[in-house]
Image (cartoon, rainbow, N blue to C red; front, side):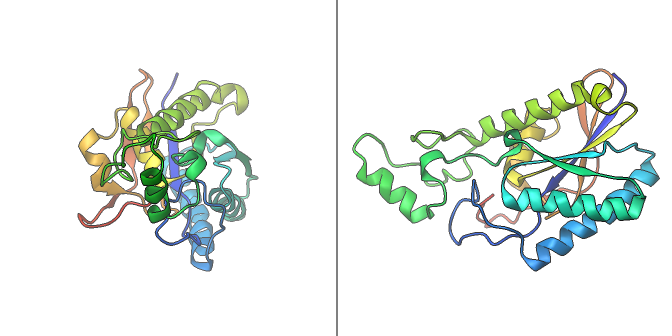
Length: 234
């Protein structure tokens, strides 16, 4: 396999419920988020031209509205800027870490439910950002499991890229910050200690290169440096 490029985009700014894990929240982009997504499409058109990439016309996104909406707007502005046609394909494999049956509840509500349930011990104080912790409810997964799911999807889509889109050398994936960072770790791009230190800017590309030998590396695009006291909700 020749070198391929995975263009990772975190969704744009959206109407997130306060003090609630992002997970499967169903809300759409804010006006600022829409502009971020349109800007991303224009940026990617220039980046592809500068880098000599042939972009796959299929842009993958998670099924959360914020990611789908971001991908759709990216396709719109990218098509306008490049003169090519792009379309969005949703896939659950790109979803954020699932909190299962506790989806869309506030942190306080989640912790109270676990405290009231005699089957469960209280979660650790930093459970939201603990990469290995899984809430003890149906359908929940750890951040590391989410990253493994996303990493497997990226590898699978690169494995059949030539069959799906002959000649394409780059593929756009729109998803969620924490799941994408953990995927980068699973692919050997980020050290474990870097996962908490970094975040992703809204709708700004981070590009990973998949080498011909199967190894992955950071190619271009800046991770966001997370403030030490910043609460992780993604």
